[in-house]
Image (cartoon, rainbow, N blue to C red; front, top):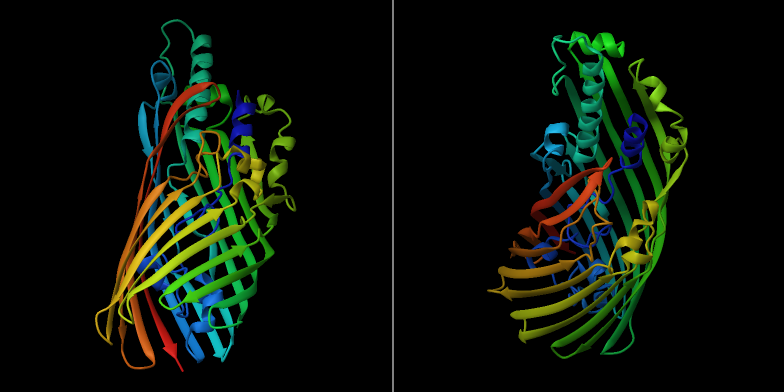
Amino acid sequence: MTKKIIALLLLCSPFNALHSMAGGLMTNTNYHIAFDRMFARGTTFDIDAIYSNPAGLAWGHEGWQLSFNVQKPFQYRDIEASLNQPYATVVGIERHKFKGKATADPFVPALFVSYKHNNWALGFMAGIVGSGGKVTYKEGIPMFAVPVGGMMSQVAAGINAQLPAGYPQVPGNFYNQDAYMQGKQYIYGIQANYTYRFNKHWSAAVGLRANIYNGFNRGHVYVTSDNPIVQNAMGSSDLLRLNLDVDQNGVGINPLFSINYKLDRFVLSGRYEFRSKLNIPNDTKTLSITAAPSLQPQLGNVAPLAAPYQDGVKTRYDMPALLTLAAGYEFIPNKLRGALEYHWFDDRHAKMQGNRQKELKHGTREILAGVEWDINKTFTVSLGGQRTDYGLSDQYQSNTSFACDSYSIGLGGAVNLNKHLRLNIAYFCSLYSDYSRQTEYMSIPVSETYSRTNNVFGIGIDYKF
């Protein structure tokens, strides 16, 4: 039993796709504050076109532009576990919510720089293009708590069976469990584009982005007992100790291209980003498992189970190919504009650890819509919405990497402080659908419900030279 639990703890430790921004399972799409307040930015000619519509820079500001943006997301990722009888009594859990807090400290920055001259333009962007945060479970997660509870129940039963008649029995809550798990994923991106306008209707852009992965998986599970009967039977007050500390760093490259068609007040655009292969090696600081003397013979040979976390072993975290299509129309010239947009992420062909991508029903699909109104020469307001469908399945979801389909709403505005400087502010929230599934840990059936909340505040400045 103990050997199986160690296998479970090791094989399920990494936290994948700590996603706290907008976009697909591994890819962010909100870098500029204009996205947060409108979402559908695929037909913009402003400086955020460097990402959202690179070919659109050909119709943008003549000369230099600069933009700096910061966003602060607040997200919770909770797992509620429920067990029916008799398992609830055996494990010691009937219903419990394991609360996870995702953070991006201190904030998520993005920098844009562009230069346009006549029919050509150059664009540069740096930001967090994938994942973007840490998630912490201070009480551990069900896949730890449930099997450990089951194992400790067996330990108590074994000890009680050997006690003399009438001797005080070891209670089911004889042990203390200290479980803590934290994972981090940041994918920093540096992107450069070249844009050229062929005529009064058509333009195109090509670009290249370097994706720099930085992450870690850290945690521990300590099972101890103050009960003297247990200590005597087990040979120690420390029954089980697991420690994991693994850093991961790597780089991937992907090209991209974009086209834009403009006819008076009507704009069509398309963008395609190729898959970025990220094969990340482990820099393992700590990987240790110890048990009380009487449990040690049960540990067996766990070396093969620890193999994925040994120093130098590589894990796939590919960023998928992305196709975007957008249509925009200016209802009132230089006053009121709107856009519709579609995103498709080819997640099923972007490799993940253990080939989990094959469990998805389809790649991520997003529909975005937004409107923007220039009230006057000083003030602009905008509103947008987004629907995200990940193609999830029970087999894809796990305690350490789960997603929930969502609707997102964003709003905000811009203030032209002078002819050069613009201030952008925005807020958006994501309304997630809970995901429920039936699973089991060490033959113990468990009902799990995954839930998430997400709120993002952003502020940025644009400067035109």
